[in-house]
Length: 403
Ligand code: SIN
Ligand code: CO
Image 1 (cartoon, helix red, strand yellow):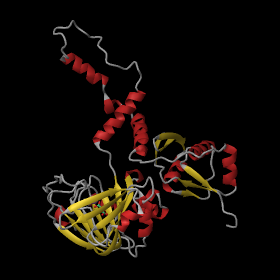
Image 2 (image 1 turned 45 degrees about the vertical axis):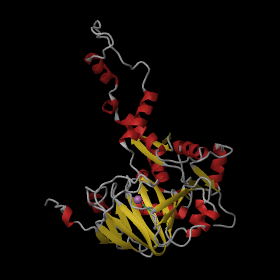
Image 3 (image 1 turned 135 degrees about the vertical axis):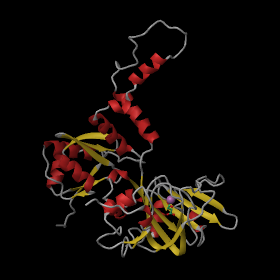
Image 4 (image 1 turned 60 degrees about the vertical axis):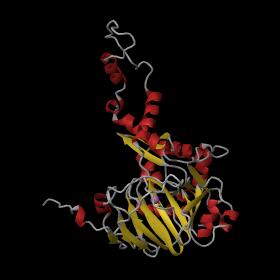
């Protein structure tokens, strides 16, 4: 029997999650009907949601050197917005009052393992599509104003209530206000409005105008944001990659050259040769294309990379630590992906390639902590040592007195 797909009209924009189906439907159905296509409000997506981070800790993080934070205040009467970028200080918070301001911190998953654990709920998506968990804290009336994002986002309500307004009108104008540095929309006419409670989650595909405002009391929203490289980024990186890898002798060539008729002209024959010199992706085999993509995607959008340990570990020293029960923590800034080509496997981490086995590559991408460290063959031992000495894996010794 053919599977009949619901028409666009019949698809609900609001559903209720259950413990078995947190998205209110199977992940396959969500991907088929909503992902990159239309918004969805999921009530109760995270029942009894427990905050993985307290507002004070978020404020503390916003004051750290290296954390990406913004403090945004809205003067409602004059419709003026003030944006202060981090690192923030205690005195910045002292001036905020108890309404119409919000603090936003990006990449919190890289700083806090409990926040990173939220991402486990999104493992039905390719892990390398995930950009970060951004967390906002807002007092009533606080928000960033109506805007459009270029990427998919899951807006999970963590604390208090937030009023969300969105527009599903495909014709909605997307011009920015030029008096505010926040890329806010000049015009915003909502088609849908909701009040979200803790545990509710709004999914938005790219390009949907939206505006979230804290309601009633303190409000925390967790934005699980995805990134897809733009064609411009892909082409730019691929061009660099090809420039590095193509042999010198492959170049513009003209063995068929006839005497020049009009000096200086780039004629049709020359254009044809330029095309021959730039076969681009159609001429790339799978191995080359996937090798480039592995390097690119694991470097993509990484604000930082793990630092190697001050002193590299020897093979024997690592083996001794692991035999003593040490576990291996994946560094939060480490971004990994892998490719299998026949019997070979390559692991990519922050733009570098490592020979790997499928088993270990998959394990490393799946688990933040390898505890106990796995039994390894020769390739895997070399891989673990290289990852430790490049800072991607951090050995953590078994604490004395613990089983
Ligand atoms: C917020 O949490 O205040 C903003 C999230 C968003 O609109 O992308
Ligand atoms: Co947004």
